[in-house]
Image 1 (cartoon, rainbow over the protein chains, first blue to last red):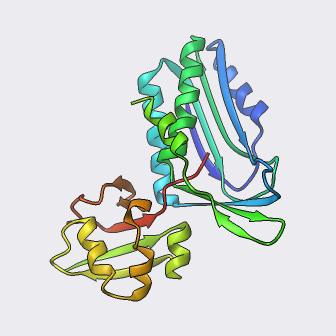
Image 2: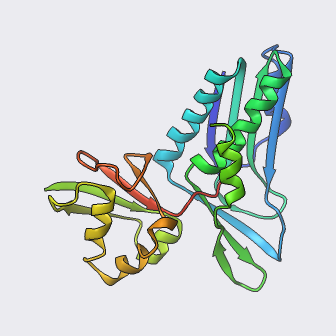
Amino acid sequence: MKSVRVQPEDFDPGGEMAALGALGSGGVASFVGHVRGDDNLIALTLEHYPKMTAKALDDLAEQALARWALDGVTLIHRIGRLVPGDRIVLVCTASRHRAAALEACAYLIDRLKTDAPFWKKEEFADGRTSWVEARQSDAAAAERWD
Amino acid sequence: MAHVTLLYFASMREKLGREMEERVLPESARTVHDLIGWLVTQDADYASAFAEPAKLRCAIDQVLAPFDAPIAGAREIAFFPPVTGG
């Protein structure tokens, strides 16, 4: 089972995990990313390249399904304006083997950060705004799966 | 002469003040690198937006492409900064 969604709405991590759990694989791993409230940040706005995002996320899910023995993959990424504490992204994987579920989950969030066309703009309490810059540590984390 | 749609995202969109445009490319533009070289001669805004190509990424028909990639047959070419999702 593969489910890939990009949406402004929030999602329910428990419900998504339960849906994968119901496949009966025995193991479900998940990662949920939230907006960090650093440095007087009041909001993040996520922009994306819709035609490419759909393709990039679907490719990532397919790569994970090809590489690990998974029964299910769920990828959800939010877009639009979010405030600290809001959920941004969910990765959920189901497998008979815990190592496969955990590794595939780590692979998907690492690769999503470097391969999917999303950009974050930060708004601060003093009215300043700035685009988030890509981090070398994220590139290194993605490369370890090559 | 090839018609292509150019798309700009995030800081590139803001620097250029536009998110898309249709362009007729010159025969000399064979790669992404050639395309950038031609665009920067069109307007001072392009020269400034493309001033640091190392901080830019490109996608040809929705697939990430290096700057030496050929653009023959491309219908949509997008320029944007390195991605920051997740």
